[in-house]
Amino acid sequence: MSFAVWLTGLSGSGKSAIARELLAQLHARGVDAARLESDVMRTQLTPFPRYDERERDLFYGALAHLAGFLVKQGTPVVLDATANRRAYRDAARRAIPGFAEVFVDAPQEVCAARDPKGLYRSAREGRSSTLPGVQAPYEPALAPELVIRGDRGTPAERAAEIVALLERRGWIPAAGWEHYEHGADIGVRGFGATKAQAFEQAALAMTAVVTDPAGVAPAERIALECEAPDDELLLAQWLNSLVYEMSARRMLFSRFKVSVGGRKLSAEAWGEAVDAARHHPAVEVKGATYTTLRVAPRDGGWVAQTVVDV
Image 1 (cartoon, helix red, strand yellow):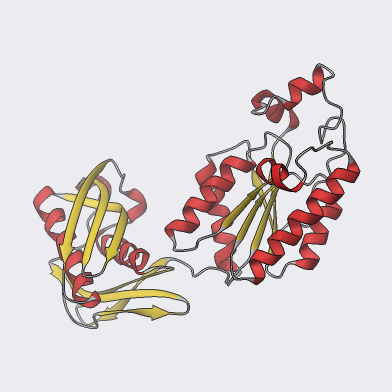
Image 2 (cartoon, rainbow, N blue to C red; image 1 turned 120 degrees about the vertical axis):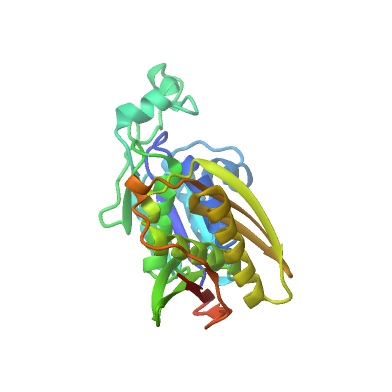
């Protein structure tokens, strides 16, 4: 499903850094979104901007029209633009199906201290007269779909909040894992927007058989490669490669990055040495079996599952 996410907030609030990270996280899930960034788009839509209300009316109207066109053609859009008047964003909401407004909230003093474009300095020195929030109104959203703090955490953390919103709305397939019962052994199931992401989540589910993955620090990285004649056997090979590394290195893993191309898989796994006092290992995973082995599309995404012998 296509959608439009409009990041609004004062200049310096962190919109652009969050938008770039959001695009990267969406791409990792197999979602290729377009970013419409106001400074770049102005060079095409209003190449000689005055930043007065008339010019802003024209620019934000054209920006919303372009975003709506892309969404209707099947391309998700991330808009990175202050849009200081509430009416600009409200007009986009009415025109674009699947619209979400995200307010990047940060105190003005923090934004002015950052001043990545020198706009606050220009305003102080009298070289500009239209800076939103200082010399022109900035109208925060009254009921945005999401409010995130641009002055706290990292852009990756804030972007992850937006991804979670898109998952809750059903606009992108949710990523996650679960266990299922199978006699004395345990089934592990991963699901995600892409096949690779489902493989990553299945590996995380296998770690969770042993311990809480949140308690495993991604301190050391290892690289793995494997090959198999089909997706199901590739999943089993992937998990068994991890089981071997867990045993040989006495490690647990909590973060994975997988790439699947044809019959080959290449991956990175991050983890740390087993600390029995801290990790409290519940069982030892002996290997992935072929029981209930399945890799298949599901609900617009992918599922990867099998039973592990413990």
